[in-house]
Image 1 (cartoon, rainbow, N blue to C red):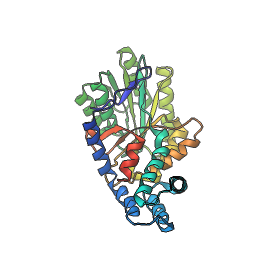
Image 2 (tube, helix red, strand yellow):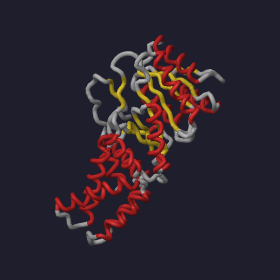
Image 3 (cartoon, rainbow, N blue to C red):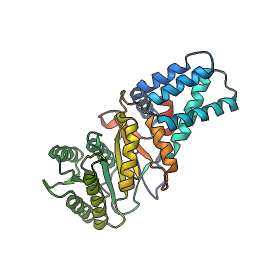
Length: 324
């Protein structure tokens, strides 16, 4: 089991066991194999020429890196090739991995819990992104790490969401605040108040999935965030967006829209399971460079449905897995 979280004033968590991390990297490489094989084919020739760069450009665009990130990576790669005087395609491939890792590096930051008191996490995302399942996995890791967790079932529009969250609460033996048909903001207010009263370390609020174009529902998310702040000044401490890795450039659109509405503090990228292309993280990283409030970190990435298929994001590991 890996250490997912750290207290803000605590020492950095020890690194995971090498065997466990290799097992995770194997699953990540398998999940990104569709993208990796397409890019790797570019480097099977014997020459470094314009044709190689043209093929690479097409492969990066197909990997959903987007025009801006593709142009940036190609320019950076050509500079690195010139500086190192690389002559073999395999060497150029490694230089690309280094360039991608450097682009992604600002996204790498662990989720930090408050040193004292209750940490409130507000989790948002579109329908089908894997939001409630992600909450369940995070709850398991928190609970197994000795944290007392309370869940708030604020997705009151979809009965199955409350039931799904209740199942995760039961599996993890944590408490849940759930009210059928109640106002979502009222549910989170009660949950945060209860979490503080019961001495909980973490309160996680699940919210209804919605498209960023559903303006009235996005306004409701803003209301939930304001209500959390009324229940506990300074909260929510984290506003996490769960993004389906299969959505390509639409993922960047979602990040921008939810950030404009709520001021995101972190991302979770799910479903990097063989159909996702993965390159969109480069586009998100370049957008984050220009964000006035700084980069929105990718705290976790997931490659499947099991507990072990969610892990902390490491820029260099991701770059290597993407180009395997």
